[in-house]
Amino acid sequence: MTDHPGSDAITITLAAKGDGQTAAALGALALSDHTQSPQAPLSSLADAIDEHGGRVALPYGKGHCLTARNGSTITGMLYTTPPIRWLQGQSADQRARLTQALIEIELLAVFEPYRNRGIGTALLETAEHTARNAGTHLALAKIRTGAFPTMRWYRRRGYTIAGQSEPVVFRTHQGFASCDDGSDGHQLAVKALHSGSTVRRHTAGGATCLIVEHTTQPSATRQP
Ligand SMILES: CC(C)(COP(=O)(O)OP(=O)(O)OC[C@H]1O[C@@H](n2cnc3c(N)ncnc32)[C@H](O)[C@@H]1OP(=O)(O)O)[C@@H](O)C(=O)NCCC(=O)NCCS
Image (tube, rainbow, N blue to C red; front, side, top):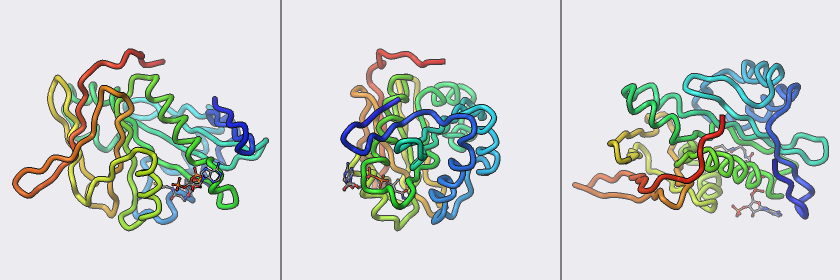
């Protein structure tokens, strides 16, 4: 998908059949300081990748596992999913709209010896580019509370970090839907992927929320 000359020729591609075990090892690294279990066990993810490659069938859509390679060595991975937990709490109407609108960064990790070379950034940019081209408006990530370097890393890449339990309200022409971190020791990081979408903090009665507003239709259409 992406080649980054000048940065050790990092290549970002959709995971291939047979990449499952390495992807799961990276997934375990991403979860190593998380209190929360992944939406699907890593062994299932590994099996799905080994059998089908980086497009994984999930409730409400597909997961996408990107891998970073330095030469032929897998050095990093990023796994995106539909925001399944959020979608489960929505009405059927809202669910249909939000499934198209949001992407969740479920797992992101780079093997330690390969960090600080731009691999994480290349994975994130490729995932955002793909989501943007598919018409997705918002990227969401969950970051462990207290993981300040990770928060700073996302902030430097355009994400707004919600406070603990601070709701994120998604506002469209059709109405509102909101989610929060579930008070499970994580905070949400959000980024608008289109110029027609904005993220702003709103304060009312001493409480705050992040409002994501979508004002124009992106010109791109979702790919199959
Ligand atoms: C978070 C994580 C994925 C970042 O991966 P990474 O490949 O080290 O990220 P990058 O190299 O793109 O960026 C890290 C730093 O390296 C530096 N850097 C980036 N590109 C560089 C390059 N080409 N050359 C030299 N340094 C570079 C930058 O200083 C950057 O920090 P910044 O935020 O100040 O810009 C990685 O630290 C990791 O796997 N952490 C453990 C798992 C984890 O916490 N995952 C996130 C869960 S939400």
